[in-house]
Amino acid sequence: MVAFLFWYKLNFVPTQYRISGRGAEEISAAIEQGVREGDLAPGASLPPVRTLATELGVAPTTVAAAYADLRRRGLVETAGRRGTRIRPRPATAPRSAVAIAVPAGARDLSHGEPDRALLPPLGPVLSRIDPGPFGYADDPVLPSVRRLAAQRLAADGVPADALTLCHGALDAIERCLATRVRPGDRVAVEDPAWSNLLDLLAALGAEPVGMPVDEDGPLPDAVSGALRRGVTAMVVTSRAHNPTGAAVGPARAEALRAVLAGSDLMLVEDDHAAELAGVPLASLAGATSSWAVVRSVSKPYGPDLRCALLAGDPATVARVDGRRRLGPGWVSRLTQQIVADLWQDPGIDALIAHAAGVYDARRGALLAALRDAGVDAVGRTGLNVWVRVADETAAVTALRDAGIVVAPGARYRVDTGPGIRVTTGTLPVEDAPAVAAAVAAAVSARLTPRT
Image (tube, rainbow, N blue to C red; front, side, top):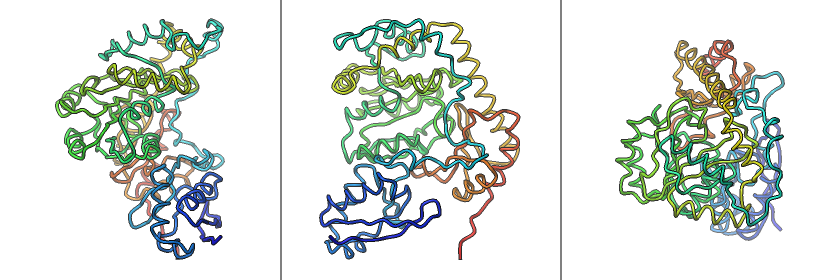
């Protein structure tokens, strides 16, 4: 079997990997194996189609078919003149291959997680829940959870006559999209967008259509443009948008409803931050005939709970519910009891409100310090600040050299310009000026070309 040998750099160490195969499936499998085993790093360039075809002794159409298959399954992306590259977070890659390296002693502002010290303690709750046993035939959503969830959603103006549970926000979004989206379809997303959502669309074989955002969410003209491009679905973050902190306000919600009126696309509203967002929910529920509002409990109450509410039109909820029953079946009723207990505890409500205030103070402190330093940054709500930069790689590198690790904007961008995401969830207010000074210096940095 003929094999093509090429070189790339992984963490600045030269590495070899052999691509082999005579048919498109074999070539695709060889590349996937390299990604899966960590030999092909995220961002690694694949050989041009004709170059690889010549080396393997196959037709260019064979290699093109292999690349197309990898692209449909979310492993590679086409990067214009830069050719075909392994995606930053390919669907088959081990997590260790895509994590951002944090040097010893560096401050990690890249992770996007809530502060564990601000999560409510679960020990007392665990001592109160009913251990069961529960069976396959029991209601997949406990009556207490259904009642409490409906009350909480209704208080925010979200109809909850049809409601179910999923295993986290991304699971819920995927199940909603699966009811309408097919490979090759276009899906409108904010630009920049949540990186996990972009990875999900790649895995579904869908094409993201970016909608520029301001602090109030997607711009109405951008939504109109997406509709003209024939999108099948649209995902909008209600508040605490990751990575920009945008939040849809009442006026913007009204404008978006006007644009969406009469559309039959699947509209998925992601309210992942919920009680931590710090601003009221201005929901788009019901703006289209097919819709869903997803509310996760991960950010306020704990990522390990893996539970998200999903309210929507009856057909969408029934389809999601039915498909989930064929897989995991239900969200653990033990988990459901924990969530219901947390929702009914005034002391927990006070802890969540305190956490929301702390996050607002931390984000606000960094944002104010950045603006004082003349840095173009946004972050109205949530745990992140988005900083626009001229040279993304140079900024990330300069900050790393200064002992601060941030997330490169390439993970989040569709068509928008370069930037970096700085997570403020664990950043003490008193440290904001020093971090802002380092960011200000990094924003003006430029990489020196190697000779």
